[in-house]
Image (cartoon, rainbow, N blue to C red; front, side, top):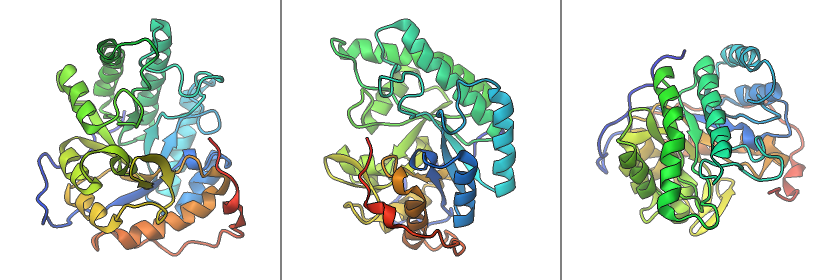
Length: 323
């Protein structure tokens, strides 16, 4: 079992709050899918990242393959050797169904299909406990055709209940991500789920900074302040208003220094993980570029990253993005 997660700020953050908590940056393995997991972890450690957002997938710690516990112990040992913190992410596209992206979801009409997704999340919580992760990320899924909203919310609440029970027993927060196009798409939707479930202690929030820019009524700066009491995981990338496309830093519209200052002011102590899942063709290049950008944009209390070792030719960045 892992230790209890660190406490977070439990109230609104004033606009002029001081930046007392150094931010810790990670990179998501869903943006490094062309690398073996050990190579990806070594890369991130060499670049100076504080941790990794580990997506459980067939190429990176497959949650459905045999000997999961033994393989998890090996990963835990490697993370410790490299000095990397970890959060567990569950957004793999085809880990459960090789023909349906993100299927089945927590909203699937078939109860057995929903149970398969819940089982994946239970496994993720168990893996997170064995890795000493600070949270497990998940999302609701898209509302199926011919499913009314009330039914979709009922399915989501019922299917998450055993997962939350497992999370409570393990001391691992389950951090639900508002995802554009999903049933749970906004911060308001997160609060709807929270109230529906009776505000269970293990239920927390994954806040994706780009998603705030994409569709929240408040700008990212104010989203962070509003979300502070429930923050358990943070994802970050650039994005444009009304366009759900994860972009490398500097290619979107977000002004990052005030955003990162607001995040530091909340007292958030988990990882802030770069989320570029459609850039794996040039993953090492983007990992190398992202950390200096974030360190330069972060408040002064965030330590500077050590100088990275050269990564060679980065001309592969001109390749097309994959879906």
